[in-house]
Amino acid sequence: MKIEELKEQLFALNGMIRLILKECGYDEHRDIGICVDYDATDKDEHMLYKTFSDLMKHLSYSNLLLEYLQKPVKEEGVITKTKIGKYRLNKTTINDGDCVEILQQGNGGKWELIVFGDIYKLEGRYARIRK
Image (cartoon, rainbow, N blue to C red; front, side, top):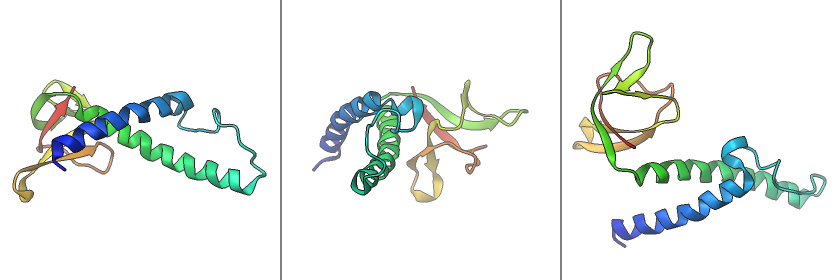
């Protein structure tokens, strides 16, 4: 399978993922308990609920990445850090949970997609952002 075929299939699958997330209200509440009826005293239903709850986290993360990858690159350059500790790429502030592509120097100059969080030190890194 070629990468373009895989991309098309994953983007098509993401349409279904978006529908499931929306129907469960997962993006707003991060919990399926408010939209899924199940018998908490039933061991099988409880196991399914816990398993599906975990899967929803993965589907939400997959949706975030696939939604991001469908957008064109809009900003590219070196990331700076403001006086108040915020990271910026040109005029765009990078917040927790934002997708950022970092150029990996030691990996033959290949792009790596990350979801920004506290563990990343981005100042001085060459990056791009899609919008």
